[in-house]
Length: 195
Length: 211
Image 1: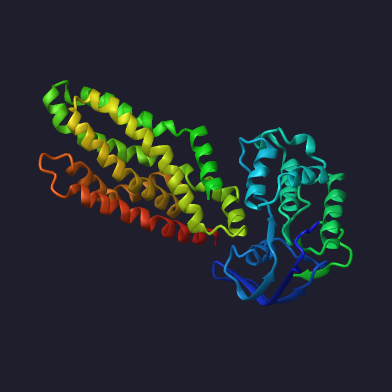
Image 2: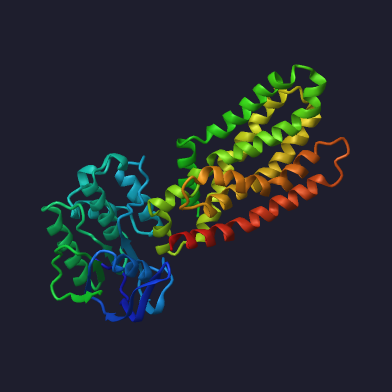
């Protein structure tokens, strides 16, 4: 799955998040090595998404975040051009990731949507879009996956596909940080409760 | 960078890049109805009118320059891939000018015919627009990023952009005067300043809009 060869890592030391002058959480520390996963849980508004966006460098970090390896973020924004067929929209990101575009087909197949490659993104359903975002994450060949509510909108057949992709990524030496308040099976995952 | 510019161009030409050009031509069509068909009046004032039309046309695409990519998370995904906000803004600036500047220059030919401008004035106008449109495009990118996330960003963008475009308008229209002096040089300076500032202003504004 990885194909990168070098090992990745993610270490948070005393990380906090302040949004609009309000502290969401503080003093969070964790260290993840290849193959590890962290499951971030907590009530709505506690800062699960903010934590992932802080790790991704999209929000200013309080505390210290050290990481080695490339990041991929799958959140509620699909970031796919609505007028393009799905395969082409994903190929744009594959080109930026400098990966070969066959990875896109493999990723689409892994999530059971390879028949949607020719369909414009704008007419995909919520669940199909979510699968497409996860397919982009898989195709990116990134070391660290940040998954924000990855099961939202997914049906009963898609969740096992996602869990299989997560397991394959971990066994290939990747790291997962997933935030969810729904069930997501990640055996041996570090549980991070924000409160 | 080429991938980014290509994507922006595809979106621009699929999504109404012709609108500002149609607006510009429409002003040239309507202006003689407003002031009458007197050739001398048209020829004397036409160049300035076309400059104002170009400026207003540059306002039209502002709401689709940056906001859609912010909302759909494209800018987030670019940032994750190591593309700085400044680089993304630069790509947008180049693509925006390519979809706006050259078509506008082409439209200047029929527009100046409608306003009875002579060949020399047309040449001077086209040269001025060639120098000035990158500045207008840069202003558009800056204003679009500064109004990210605001409701009714459109009217506010107009209020922000038009005063900032005054130097470009003064020196652009000034270059059409019988004795232009150094208007073209000052137009170049104003345009260059906008282009140089735009990636940094837009980059900072995009980062601020994420919070």
